[in-house]
Length: 305
Image (cartoon, rainbow, N blue to C red; front, side, top):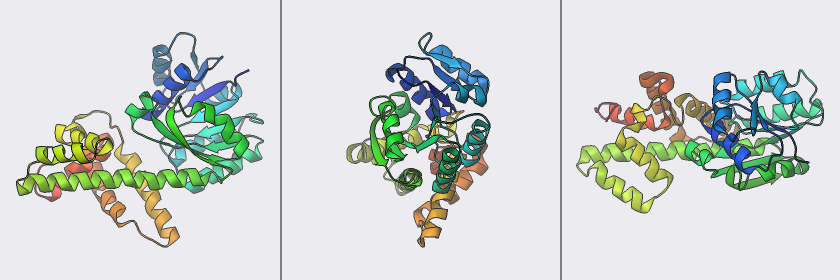
């Protein structure tokens, strides 16, 4: 018999991951969904096939009825609050799978608390944008005890994602360490594109000519972010795709990890400074692609293109 699954946390990524678990996860019981804003959970459940999901009114209700509990929230404080609430009830024999991007130390501390309560824990951060989550094209990184990781794999490749990185048998912090370092690549990509487009505009090359080169040479994420910048999507959208507060959190984690390891991430330091400018200009609505606006400001141009 298939395990009963629960999902906690419905940010931009979580909604798509839930949808794919329901549609492709071969569940024989409705997915239990909980979100702090219950309206989001209700809206998602109503958008899914009839009878395939149910909404819980509390963390305790979601956890108590589930065998495997997936979590995906914005930061370290949020996941700690969820797990602390969950552990107030009986969790013996349950498996917690956290897809959040958090500091590796946070993952290790969660693992300790959860295993001491008689449950299992797997870190499963994911790489990809919300559109990739919707389309089941994420890359999942799995770490934790091998037996626990094997229980999670059936919900990764060909369900939530197109592939997984298997760190089974390795400490859970290895998964989130890779995730934090991997996210610096995204930050650096956005920084490079922003600086390139501003130079192209001010030097007379033209941003359209640079974008044509990017599409030809670097199709995929580079071309997608370039298009978002040139279209003005980075400042027009009401809800960010990659919120500035989350990007700043990831940058802080990366810089702290580098310092602890005796090195520096100078590119990340530059990106973090620009993210601070984005936050000041756009507030919580700021997006990581708004770095383009920050670089424009430094060059004497308006934030909005």
